[in-house]
Image 1 (cartoon, rainbow, N blue to C red):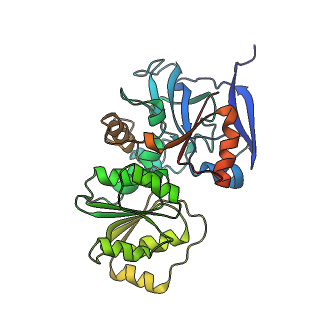
Image 2: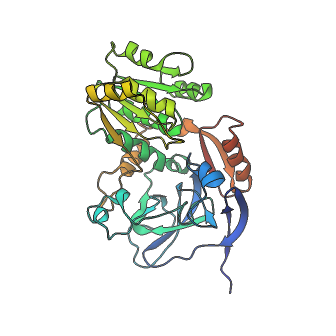
Image 3: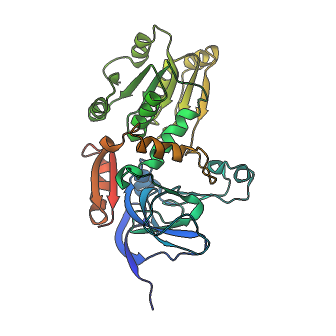
Length: 354
């Protein structure tokens, strides 16, 4: 008897997307099969699909998702059929030094749903029970599908490792993750959050969500704006969230003495820094933090994921306004091309089974 089939958007080669029927993944011991409610499209999915490719083909992309438990394998307890859940998409090896200390994000031999293994542009996904977290009551699957990027945003700002109370945070790039960083900065007590972008619709969305200090980088000198808002001292924390040379230079140029710069955006190309700017960073004794992914705990400790879900449940974090498109799998190819060509404004795009 053949396996039952499910609908999935399958990447066969760079740019070769096909809506197909493929076997529903089987469930092994210690695994959980999740029926997808919604899967967000990450900024990294667009180059993955249209220019870089995945690690092998064919692959089902999609790693930002929430759904309901369909089937639990043997040796799974504490999770039941019908539970609403999110899934941490990094599958760690459990053997390297990083894994032994619980720093799964630094695993040296990891797998990943949506880029190395099949992800959630489909009806079902299978994941280890350790990667599953129940969604709190009152949080919708649409909101919960944004847990992964919101955890990435939280992790980026936590990298600074100091209180933000009373501080100025400047964010360069107001895509969904940039706006999520801004929300976290506000929640953590920042005195002012300054947001910069070049796309008017992105700036308008940030204003609608409640941010006042929103600026178009093409219309004024960014460093001057930051200095005007900080009595000439520069920002305490600058977050580079776009990955383009100009935003790197603006972030480094806007940080104050002893301040921190967090590199969050995936770099689109090589970045060259002028020698005077590097001298300035040295003299100001600026701290530079790399950030990647998010912290996750298997023991239920406070991690980036649980903090996000709790903040959604208590309405401190409101990600609903970021959702601009909800499309079915059968209509998803069009929206992915729209995102690639930037032919229409979008913020968070969610894909759901047809």
